[in-house]
Length: 143
Image (tube, rainbow, N blue to C red):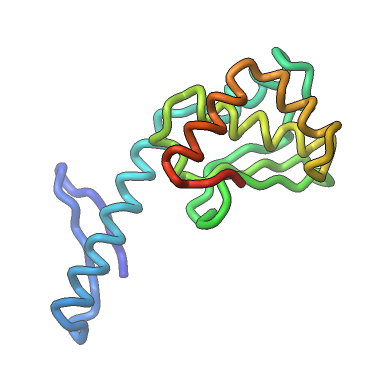
């Protein structure tokens, strides 16, 4: 399957052997993927990650990207490489919630667990509790 936007129209290519229900399902899936990609294109994660790290005296990530593979978590990181991945699902959240997710992962670059030391780093972000509340209220949970 393949999807692209051509002259403002979503074009989805699927095998002709699919049933109508399968076709509708995959068109919906591909439309969601393209919309997420377009939303995340407007966000400069590298600049935002660097700005938050400097502002809150946290480690600057060596690499920070959106990921379509993050289905259960809002973010993840690999402390050894300094890489941070943010779920592209979070691109549509208010900026202060996205910032919280970034800060959460930046804190993991220094403290890999959810110990009190980790939460002290996260609490440097002024809107941490509010953002956590947003995620809980949306019934999305926090990862």
